[in-house]
Amino acid sequence: MGETAARRYEAMTATLYEPSLGTDAAKVESAAAGKRLELVIRQILSDEECGSEWERRRLVRIIERAMSLSEGKKLLKHILAPLEAEKKSLARLLDKQDPELVIEDGVAFAADEAVALKLLGIFLHLIRNAIDHGMESPEERKQSGKRSQGRIVIRSEIDAGALCMTVFDDGRGLDVKRLARIYEARRGRSPESDEDAAAIIFEAGISTKDKASEISGRGVGMDAVLSEVHALGGEISIRLGVMADATGHRPFEFLMTFPLPMGRVLPSWKAGA
Image 1: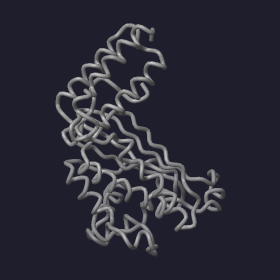
Image 2: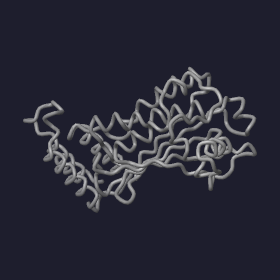
Image 3: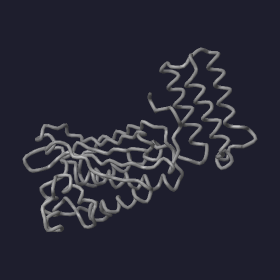
């Protein structure tokens, strides 16, 4: 983007932070600030001089700075930031290698403190579940032809007017055969599909482990995660991959959708686009 355009947008973004408002975040969070932010972003996106990688990076900085201050909301990547320290601590406690955590934040989504805490609680439990239940030891992973370090991925996007989030890992997957036996014991009949068997993990008292560890034994189950997702007006489900091995373990993803009214998304923009 040319120097003239850069200076023009520098002046425009400066209007988001009127000196009379001071530095107190409570004074900055106003509907007017949000409207000014959207105006600036729309004008940047429609400017013919925009489009370079430099300008896209600049736009990211503008959005993050403005949204962090306006309306007292937290960006999604800031909401999930504590997961990095949590997974390191859990890996040490369980004597497992610290897994790689990849957060593919594809949307400029922000939420207030109350919603942010609920979202963080949901993902903290899913990370614990992945490390404790899913991740094998480095030795087991090498024997299975995997790299010694596990990988957990969180993706987000806006689809059909909802915030859609996916969580998956490259661990051992779900023991679908074990879950099918639990399903049959509880229902008095066999599940119609592996998907039916897998969905039973959202019921109280279900575990895919024979022996509870300090981590899995101390916390709440996936039924509590389901309740927290519902409390935000969302839904959670499981999508199974192909059969992983002869033991019946299958790779899977947690799929979650949340209504956009619980937070805010800037229009016509995706992080890193």
